[in-house]
Amino acid sequence: MLRLNLGCGSRPLAGYINVDVDSIDEIRARYPGRDIPTEAGIERYDIFNLPFAAGSVDEVRAESLIEHLAFADERRFFTEMARILRPGGLAYLTTVDFELAVRQWLAAPDDWRDFYRSDDEAIRAEHWFGTYTYAPVNRWGYLTATLFGNQRGAGQFHRNCYSEAKLRAICERMAFDVESIERFQWQGNRDHMLAVSARKRC
Image 1: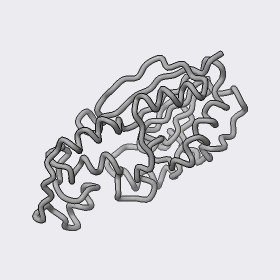
Image 2: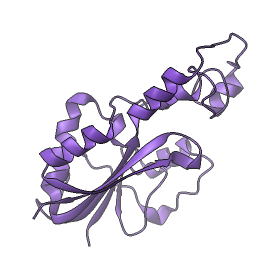
Image 3: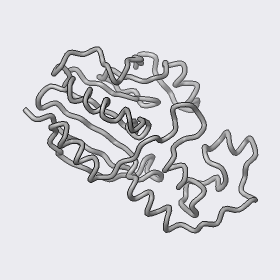
Image 4: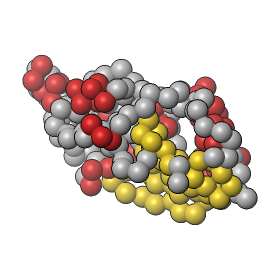
């Protein structure tokens, strides 16, 4: 089977062709606490022009990738995914549940305080300014980071957003049949995510 793991970051998968904008050395530098085995291999393919024939790929995974694409690139990405997948092939996507994140942000106290940590050590350890916690205790800590993404490095910003309804509409436009849409928390305690499994129609 030919299976792709696009935007693999620190999560290369065995049995997949792992693709990322960064090399394996750059990924190790970005995630110093993670063990990225050399044998995993990271390809640096253009995700809008993948080197695979039409209808030749059995599965495409894109976990926590599509929120990093600009609006102008959204159509290009999904069109390319539809091109390479074989009829009956599986598309598996995860992304932030933007609708829920916005509801959490609106419900949280607007209590930014000037005594939040903003020293270099705190900023290096986290990617938002202030609360130094993953808890959604106010609008200006991790909830804002959920909406806008990791601000620590190039390519980590969120430039797009998705709801369940939008993902269903995209799948319909690409002639994919949705098998499931599930909700989960990233890392078990952080962003509320959507996981979509869909198959290209035969």
